Length: 420
Ligand code: AMP
Image (cartoon, rainbow, N blue to C red):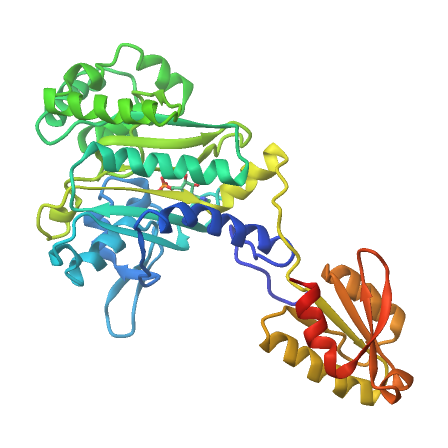
């Protein structure tokens, strides 16, 4: 071990486990790529104001969890705590919404940072794969995104996840509800911080996990009873589309999510094997966000799925991902001359598109064969002085154990054939 360790609340991805993370990112993004979503990448940091305005001044993310910094030039930046505000900022900046092709459908994958109290499933650096569909109000789009996330999780073999669904109303009906809720909450026995929250973002009080708070919320006014007709109809349509697609969901009127920008459809994917950090992903509609960050009205919807927690969910369910060995051919040279000859073969194999690796460092046969085994390679090539004198290499099929001498000049062609 060196003097240094990964910072508190972070961990490193190292082989072989890192392959799982890559596979999860791949599985989550595949359905998006097949559904017209284009890849977007934005910087790891943004103007701190973007998140203050976009994510919301009253959220824990902005008030407590942001990593902020002042640059030498005096700019106030924050490491990105989430993806949506940045993606929308980038789409507006590039005028993607003016190209006459709405919705603008984008997907992304990257690192996010929140100064949280670390525990299993909650880190200060974590990975998300996300999707945003910008500029269109259409319940089919909300349904599409939920269906694609469901498809991604199923393709990974996950089964014990649930989809929670709610509608948060829009700028017509939510303010009416908000006031009714505030009136109710002000009469409760709550601590100072929660009282402040009532005034800034009362819906989030409903999300309080403490039992003594929850007990007092039983008779709180229900958002469902306040939804305007347009929101009701929209939500019914999303529900019907999900049902038609065979996607099972649960109505959860307590679901408000920790970000201020959501309107109408909101949803969360929870996994029952994860303990307290059970949300593996979430998202919803954010019809007002573009205007909040200075853009035109662009009703949009999106989600982000946590890669770290998805990996934990796979482990909790005991799902072993089928991750194919990365190396097909492993070369073991015995002696100086063989080293040069086999390295030339390996280079040629790689150029022919065959994944090949090599026993470096002039190791003995026994140790090198162990590495060959560990690599998962289907074939090994072994050559010593005598083989080279005869112009051959020994080709061993690691599955059947069969070994045969193949002329050096033909080995690439032979392997190409055998590997199909
Ligand atoms: P959120 O934007 O908070 O809804 O986050 C979306 C998803 O990202 C969550 O469902 C988690 O899977 C993941 N996530 C959020 N915060 C963390 C964290 N601190 N550590 C690990 N994963 C996280």
